Length: 68
Ligand SMILES: [Zn+2]
Picture 1 (cartoon, rainbow, N blue to C red):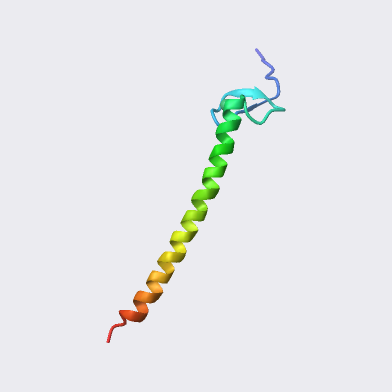
Picture 2: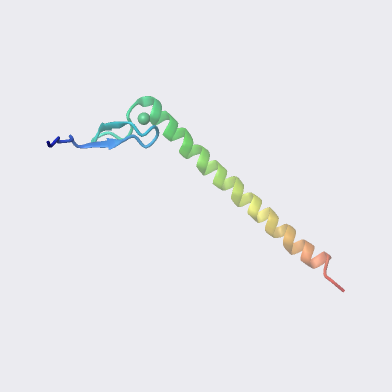
């Protein structure tokens, strides 16, 4: 018993199988992917800002709260 599976990929968003020449199974998934990427980019920028603020906080606290 042998079955030949046609060349296919799985949708990155929902995991459904689809033709290999496509990136996403539907426009809906393509939209979701675009939004997710944009959101992730914004989130990483926010985290960078938080990190910088924390760094300043630690530097200032180590300067002003130096043990005597
Ligand atoms: Zn999909």
